Image 1 (cartoon, rainbow, N blue to C red):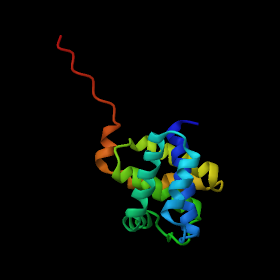
Image 2: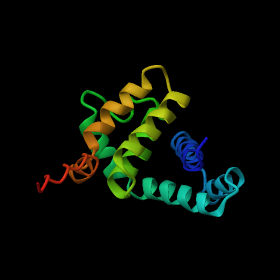
Image 3: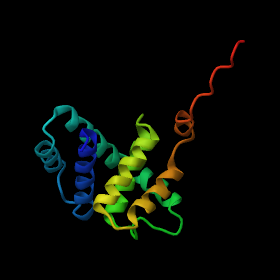
Image 4: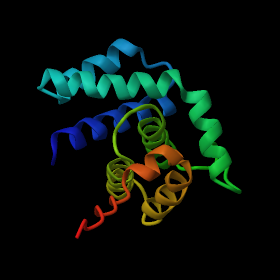
Length: 147
């Protein structure tokens, strides 16, 4: 498993944990991240994702709920809901390319969700891709031949 993929997996687990048990202290989450990720850079990356999702949860939930027509956040499976929060945060608040975010989030949904989770997550995250990120992945036009 790629290093950042492992960090995202740990973050998803921590988001799930505090979603189903809101009384978990931030220090306990930091300890879990420290135990599961031996590399300091990965710990910092994981903590930035976790803290970012927590700080922006209201805005993320609002965007996700709007994109998830006919679904409320409460109706979503906790794993899907937290994978979407993580993916939405990375799409909207980081420089990670949208294809990487979607691929990584779909893989998390596949590993921890139901058989329908990957499609569900993909459909919602696709609607959340910022226009400026969508344009970055287009192949550049070749330069005209001066001859």
